[in-house]
Length: 116
Figure (cartoon, rainbow, N blue to C red):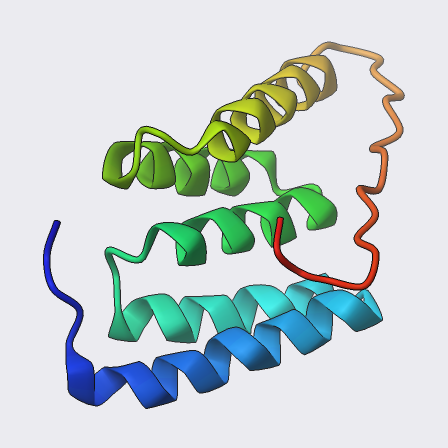
């Protein structure tokens, strides 16, 4: 696994923390922006892809959810969370693309922590 750029780490941590605050407040679009900024600095950070994928899921952007979880799985194949959430997003995406679909996306709740 590539070694993260140490000089980028404090700024990346800032964006990661900012994204966590947005998740806590339910502002998932802003969370996506914060996690994207973090991933621009440290692109091979597994948790960054997982948490952005979770945020994409909450906004109903299932293709982007699947892409982020695919990247997380490629970088860290031992993370069961990425596999399970990718499967959930695939199910919702397939259902939404059926003609006449009225699927209502469930909101995944986080309690007291953003560690998914």
